[in-house]
Amino acid sequence: MTEDQKELLEEARDSIKVAKIILKEGFPGFAASRAYYAMFYVAEAFLEGEEMAFSKHMAVISAFGQHFAKTGKVPPEFHRYLLDAYELRYAGDYGPRNAVSNEQAKEQISHAENISRLAERLIGPISSEK
Image 1 (tube, rainbow, N blue to C red):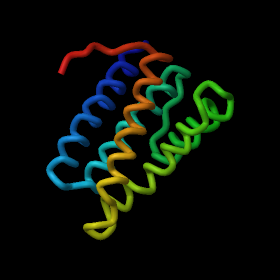
Image 2 (cartoon, rainbow, N blue to C red):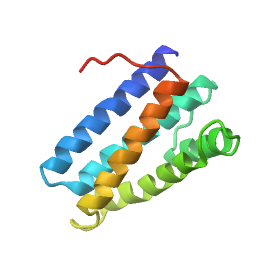
Image 3 (cartoon, one colour):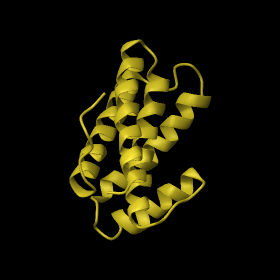
Image 4 (cartoon, helix red, strand yellow):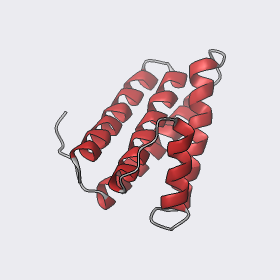
């Protein structure tokens, strides 16, 4: 695991923790957004391992799908989770106040936890600090 991958996986872990706190406080849109970023950081960590980096979100999502989901390196549903989370993040950040339900936010957090666990198995574990 590179130092950049480690930092990205730590950011993902922290984003999941924050998403749970925000959801508990009653802000599902913001929680879904943080869950998306957790998944996004994991996708970046996978790409970093292949020495790939992109400046746009959709480029990261596309490359993750092409190089990891389509090749079978990761289950394809993880690419779908990332695509769906991107759309929901947009609704949570820019849509009306009630654009994201508590259930949708919980589902996104669960997906973020699953993809983070997969990353720790395939890329390597991160410390349990924080």
